[in-house]
Image (cartoon, rainbow, N blue to C red):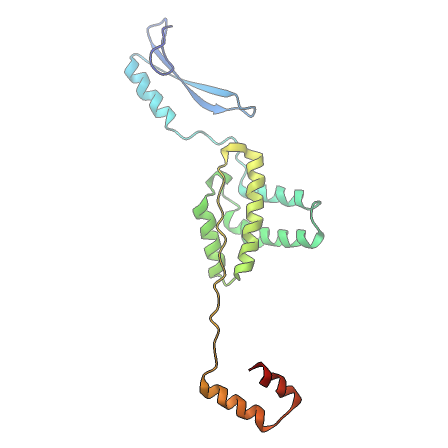
Length: 195
């Protein structure tokens, strides 16, 4: 069969055959798909249509399954109190939002949406950072299991906003000073020195 173009061959039966990589098996070996047509142009069009389809996912496990596996593996590596904290974070915060998704569906926007919703729910910045740290560990575990099929996700941790310090006005300072000086008590003396 003479080769013409990109993996397109003329067969002995006068048809054209195009070959493309359909998927990879667990060992990484390519599995090929084939398209056939009477003309070279038709095969090329069919081949381009097949190449532009996203490859089928090899693993249909949900992100929730990976979370549970990660928890089981973490149980023996950390203290009991840390495990209880991780379990609570996964069960209460991560699984309700991300548990039904496939790991391939996770991206920066999904993680950022989770972070924003946790902050909007009234959680402190430190608590949200702890949740995102656990999520980062689970994503690392997923990447080890799935390999390059799962792209690395950059997690942006929220920063704590500095609270503005309120200074007493001159009127408030005068009132406080007169109160402290009116009754010289040793307990009040420490407050006076702090001013």
